Amino acid sequence: MAKSDKSGSNDRAGMAALSPFELKDELIKAAGGGVVERPANLSMLNAGRGNPNFLATIPRHGFWQLGLFAMRESERSFAYMPEGVGGFPKREGLEERFEIFARENKGVPGIAFLAGAVSYVRDQLGLNAGDFLYEMCEGILASNYPVPDRMLKLSEQIVAQYLRREMIGKHPFVGDFDIFAVEGGTAAMTYIFNTMRENFLIKPGDTIALGTPIFTPYIEIPHLNDYKLKVVNLDADVAKGWQYSKAELDKLRDPKVKAFFLVNPSNPPSVKMDDESLEYIAEIVKERPDLILLTDDVYGTFADDFVSLFALCPKNTILVYSYSKYFGATGWRLGTIATHRDNIFDQQLAALPKDQRAQLHERYESITTEPEKLKFIDRLVADSRTVALNHTAGLSTPQQVQMVLFSLFSLMDTPDAYKNALKRLIRNRKQALYREIGIALEEEDENAVDYYTILDIEYLGERRHSRELVDWIIKNTEPSELLFRLAKDARVVLLPGRGFGTQHPSGRVSLANLNESDYTQIGRAIRELMDEYIERYQKATGKKADKSK
Ligand SMILES: *Cc1c(COP(=O)(O)O)cnc(C)c1O
Image 1 (cartoon, rainbow, N blue to C red):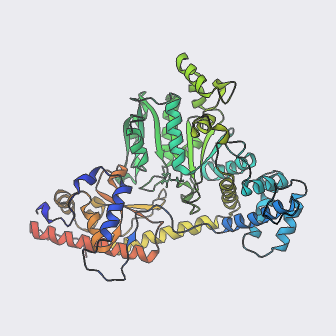
Image 2 (image 1 turned 180 degrees about the vertical axis):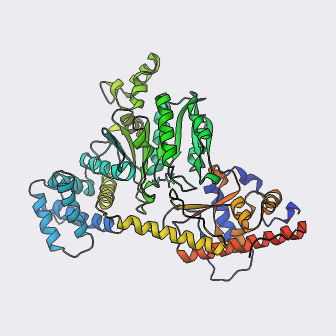
Image 3 (image 1 turned 30 degrees about the horizontal axis):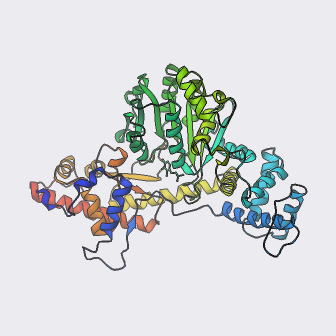
């Protein structure tokens, strides 16, 4: 079969270097391109986006009600000025006034949650309810710079409880950790790469390991001129349910490997690392106490009984978390970076060669009299505003308020009503997709998270037909041809798996982004496309060994 049989546009070669997220834009163009006749009512189905189409309503209602209360406080604290000038809330009597407000608004969405949150903070977390309300009111009014800049005080304690519940669970954990509230998980990545470089924890020419497939920026950033890092991939194996073999994990024993960057549960396979692998890494870390670990656990809340690498190797691990996915809050830009108070980053900073320490002394001396003692996490804060603007660093205070309300909502979500509703939602979508493709789903893997699913040509082709079909397709189609066909013929947009570092040609389907009926439609389009390729394969080879029904 000639390659000229491809359906596609002119300039696919140039697309090979595109990030999946950029290629997606080309696919969207193809899906809207009007080249092929299609029913007018068939609109584009973009399953490329990781952005969820659901969102947590209750803590948002809570946010708006809190805003109304805070406005009342602001206007109460100033002599009435019709020009619209208010003041800061007053700490004195705040709790009592909130109780009155809650009573007056009984039954209004968000009020029961807010009142419950205040009780929870007081009775379960042992914090002062008035202090909490004061921090929240000041925060939502946003009339002061964030102080402390790393994170508001009670907010940090509450978010720490949330991270403990979701990332550590019942795993033993000794000591406390610090949190830097940031503008989403992507800001966390930017800040961490930058501060590690500025502080000589990673240098150009150094080697880092990536657990692949992985969220594409982790692949792209190390290659940038700013970093010039060498990369070793640890490949998760589709045949092992996307777990890492011991042989792959053993690559971390190489002392050249300075750091290991991991997304767990993974994106795109959407599988959490099994307990055996976590413990195996912890064993390696005993042998390699200098190994820096970064785990991006954005999807941890969708897994059953999730335990982060941070729980097992707290001193070596930088924990990145984002509220974007679980709360449907990508527009809020809410994320956290957490490090244990006793960690190897601070130790490594103290052990740097003298000239490097001197450089860093100069870098940070404008913000502290003892730059040598500035913790790694506080260097992240300072560097996020180019050091000189450290005093205006930090996440905007209303963002921190919403982050706290999301955290409290989840802490109070017993027994996991919201969590189970989300799991049901995405898992039903997966069932619908595979049912239409015509492939029976294997027994559900206990580590599967199902926020995404990878449609792997080898996996699908072998199950629908035969290994020979797979080989023929790979030989006779161009990279991303199938994705372009899906876009043009069925207006279905998936992301190419290749850019995430998958080994086989594949498409990433987000199960978070569309409704169940859409996944049925996507499944049907995929089945039709496969049928077409099976037919072409049979014509070209004269083979008819079709195992499909
Ligand atoms: C979606 C995603 C993020 C992005 O988080 P934001 O908080 O929206 O910036 C980070 N890491 C991974 C692995 C993701 O999939």
